[in-house]
Length: 246
Image 1: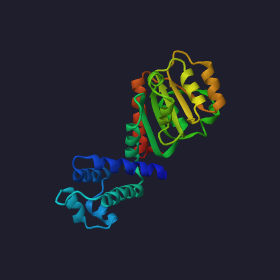
Image 2: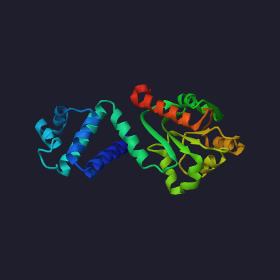
Image 3: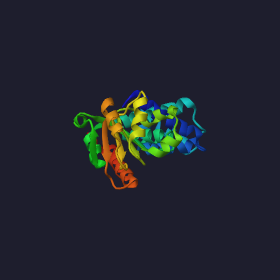
Image 4: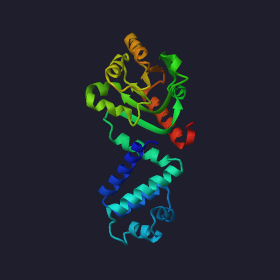
């Protein structure tokens, strides 16, 4: 996992603790989220387990920022040693909170997966650059309502579609032809590796040509409904985070 992603998780946890009505209870909550015992955490922090216990039970007053930083750093380091599953979950939560309304789901993973797996999930038909299927590996996906994005998103917020990596698929629902999403991607400097459009009325030929020009894997999803597509993507994300990655 990148240093940027780890720091983003740390800032998210640190901020959540600081704004909590009870910092002491927030400490207990986050230790529970990471599944770390008081004894193990104390060992990493270089303090007595009783110190952790007293802070969590409010027998000690609110800890200072130095203690909080060491507390968060230790939880994250322990989880990294275990494979980073909790960090991945927290990272996705932090990213999703910052997303504009048109973004329905955004997921990022510690390990890459083959594009062919996602094509299967979305019941995809490749429209452009089929030769990229076997060589494209992705670190995440973003599901977005295309119509809402056109109406609500500015160019400055478009970058948020990419989560923490452009090595991802951007999946558009509520698509009429596919032209608008591909035109937006064409003019924007950052490009996803894969674009999926969900059941347009008709696929615009220009969108295919733009995908070919940009060398973006372009896929048509044949899943029956947008709700079902979202359900499948969330199930796939759970599988990846739960250890189904490569």
